[in-house]
Amino acid sequence: MRKIYILMALCGVMAGCGNSGNKTEEQDHGATEAHEHGYEAGEHEEKGHGGDEIVMTPQKQAALGVRADTVRFEEFAEVIPTSGEIVSANGDEMTVVAASAGIVSLSNITEGSAMPKGGKIATISTKEIGGGDQLARARSAYETAKKEYERDEALLKDNIVSESHYDQSKMAYENAKAEYEALLAGGVSDKGIVASSPIGGFVKSLLVRQGEYVETGQAIAVVSQNRKLQLRADLSEKYYDKIARISDATFKTSYGNETYSLKDLGGRLLSHGRASAGDYYIPVTFEFDNRGNILPGSYVEIFLKAKPLRSAIVVPLSAVVEDQGVHYVFVKMDEDCFDKREVSLGQSDGINVPVLDGLREGEMVVTEGAIKVKLASISAAPAGHNHNH
Image (cartoon, helix red, strand yellow):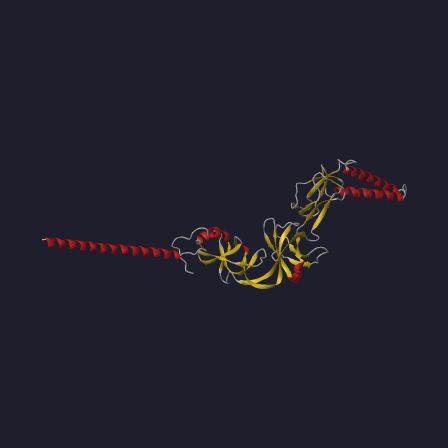
């Protein structure tokens, strides 16, 4: 009987050991399965977007105005950046002067205001100055001289006055008439003599202040027709060896922040000057049609273009974004994926810029809406989106 109890105890121990072994095998299988699942998840993440890829649906691209174009090698001139001024072309401006001495009352105009032909620049009052109203005195002198002349003309026919007396009377009349008509040339108003513009255009500059006293013949304002303008660039002497190769330019205004191409404005090179004594800059002058809102007398940033041309991959400045001094463009990989690409740039002409390194011919680059793509790069890529490039 004792032997039977011992045998049963041994069987229980063996059964417990067998169950323990089976449990460990199941746990090991579960751990292995979890490990494989975790590996697969990690592997899936690695196959997703890299850190420089941005996803944007075609619908969102259209809504944000994102546009991409294929880049090609094209000719691009050597660019020399400098500064200069917009000036009126010869014969396209006139100076308005005071027909009489007096106190100036300017019209409601400022520099840059549009001015029609015959438009009122200012009114000059002569009532407040010594000697009284000059217009009234000129009218009285004219009317008196006219009566004297007409009377002597009739008396001469009857030989009552001599020819010398008649000639003096005629001269006095003509002088009085000329003075009076000069005062009336620009018109008159209740406030005094009107100084009007002899041409249509824009007020280039006002040379007097409101309420200022002016003398007869003093300049009041300059009016420009603005049909032709000149771009005068100041070129440093260190570029003297390249001056003969300069034939074109672009320029950027400080107002409106717009860049213009002389080629688009019918521009042409007028002259290469020489540096004056004590000056280290050489004037280079172009002439162009004023087809935009370009104000004479304004200072501009200029990009002179010198031949020979060289071949380069060229993109518009709107395609380039800057991040902490590093320049990037966004390359379109497929319909909804963009790659942020670092590039090395050459000297721009204010409109386009050559890419020295970082792009290949035939790649699609975002040319409009690059800043929108940059903002989208802050967002994480959608889970499960996968591109193999």
